[in-house]
Length: 260
Ligand SMILES: O=C(O)CCCC[C@@H]1SC[C@@H]2NC(=O)N[C@@H]21
Image (cartoon, rainbow, N blue to C red; front, side, top):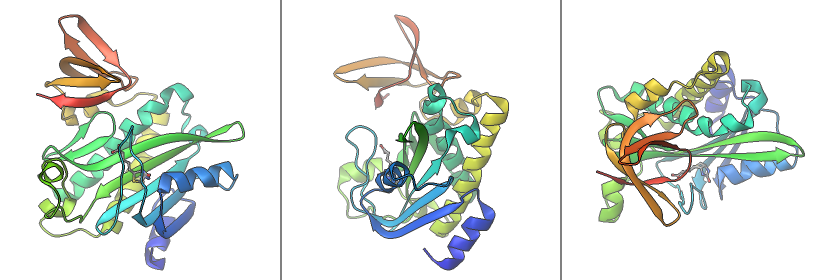
């Protein structure tokens, strides 16, 4: 990371400490080791130009090299008055911040959210989010990990990957410097978390308006079980609402594996 970028992050965003590396296994794992060693003065930005063993939800991996933007932000939940029960919302709130940041740089492009932790462009994944809790003694910290395909070249990737993944620069009129995305996301993340702290209300209507699943029949997988239903958006606690012959139910876990 250049000294210029460090200086901009320090002056333009909430970040108090920058921990930048050429290469890391996982920015989330590095953040967690800083926390457990008692070495955090939040908010901390852990940044890696390359990530060799990045993790996602469940069995997902996020290996990132050229063209990726990978970082984690460590926050103290108390700074945003977040109770443990509200932590699942942080993934959704982060998704909104990333979605709006990307959208602001791309103009008239379909940037949507896939509950609970993906950002999509034209229905392909551009960003994955992994929020985790790590404790320093009894004190919990939140690690918000974000991976974005900014200029990843998928042209030689398998058809399966090309059907599912996209880079920002595939659709931008002109390529945007990843640093600009980083700063924009950090600013918007602070603003979204601050709005939630002040209002105590998750902006579920805004989330639903940008959610790629709203109004579509989806399959939610949890273990061996798949529950199908018409997605009616998310509730105040960030759960996805599915409607089917059994009625309307809200789910807080699982992965969307089918979209009709
Ligand atoms: O798609 C997913 O399931 C979430 C992917 C999250 C990847 C990011 S990259 C930065 C941070 N460090 C990690 O090891 N994972 C997250």
